[in-house]
Amino acid sequence: MLAEHLKAAAPYLIEQKYSEYSAEQHQVWQELVRRRRPQIESHACREYLEGYQIIGLQEDRLPNLAAITAQLKPRTGWSTTAVSGFLPAQAFFEMLAARMFPTTTWLRSRDSLEYTPEPDVFHDVFGHVPMHAHRVFADFLQHYGSVCVRINDQELLEQLGRLFWYTVEFGLIRQDRAIKVYGSGVISSHRECTNVIEGGCQVRDFELEEVLRTPVRVDRIHSLLFAIESFDQLYEAMHAAEDWAEQRLLQSHRGR
Image 1 (tube, one colour):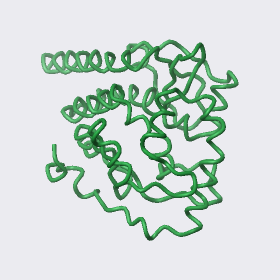
Image 2: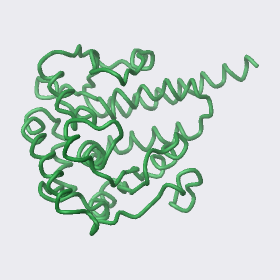
Image 3: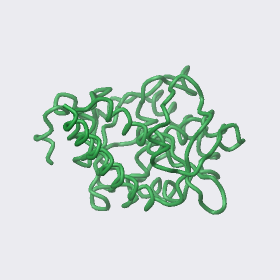
């Protein structure tokens, strides 16, 4: 799927005007990275740390999306694609299915270092993009988009959204006899990551059925998250989720 075939997403695609970032914005990026790196180096999974090096993130400069894409595309087929802001669901799924990760280009201000209600370039690139260098995770994410883009049932999409939330956004993995983080919401947030590390969050083994029936709460720090054993498990869970969704749609059509 080429960019010109993205019907829902096309109006949101923009160019990153890299030269227009100010010295202050580069300094804010540097502070954000320096605040997160010590905890991430100790508690992020191996795949995230490897991806961070592969995409060439710099501590003292905001990321150049074209340069990151040049590293990712030959490896996993993904691009880091600038968008104007929050996307409607169909546009978001279209981009994932096309291996184009929608990335905002604005950066939070210095008075919002700890938290911003809307994803910014720090959350999107520092939090998400290193994992796109991992082939199995990259395939899982593309498959998720390709499944969801074909579904019009909002209740079903809300349940599948829980799979995305508890993996891509707030996923944990058991690795090296410890709980490691890979979800962007844990990677980019000191509070969420500390909550996991210090045992403030219950960690259950990842079971697809339980994940799909666990509602998402965005108004509080997490009290429950799920840990996979490997990214192969996550990839296989997406195939199971696809089968589950198809069965639900078939039952819905029969009930009409």
